[in-house]
Image (cartoon, rainbow, N blue to C red; front, side, top):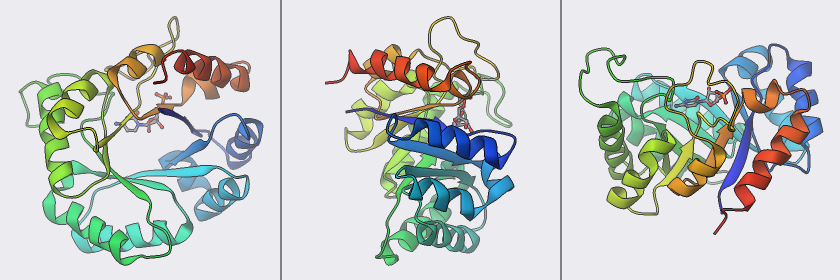
Length: 231
Ligand code: C5P
């Protein structure tokens, strides 16, 4: 069963938490990313947990292994249910994060490795001239070998990742755009239905919901589109 995560990317704390309140009982997950976390810090995580949401803390960590280890432990203590780091941070960094979570018995968030951002297209990744869909799959293999629970990738790579890394490696897919909505800065995009057909486990949606005239209705419409394709 794929699940919908709404990205609370808002320019102020009240707006983000008001949106979360409106979405209570509609979606199971919210995402707190760099924008809201920089504004409101751990209090935003606590507030969303108190509202009953599972919280995806999307800080896309990328630093030396010791710093990532500490940040991951802090995020687990904060109550996050899912975390991200950059797979491109390499084996020692990713394994340090895995170990940090395994040592943290009270709360073990799902650990996801960002592969190649869904805003990127071929030729845009510094120092890499190959095909980024293929690079994404290579990074997913590394993530699986390093013990991560899943990867963040576009819907275009999910089927290959599931086939080559096995169904246990979870896939989380941003760059979701309902038919007729703006792509914005995203490039490797899919509709909710296409993402469902790819076999992804989580769909992350920001602006098509946060900037809709009626965010709750926009979320409900995406859920309805997903429901027709749930297995
Ligand atoms: O507004 P939009 O639907 O494009 O938001 C997508 C969300 O997913 C943003 O919060 C962004 O930070 C996040 N994300 C992404 N691409 C990744 C990882 C996370 O777009 N590879």
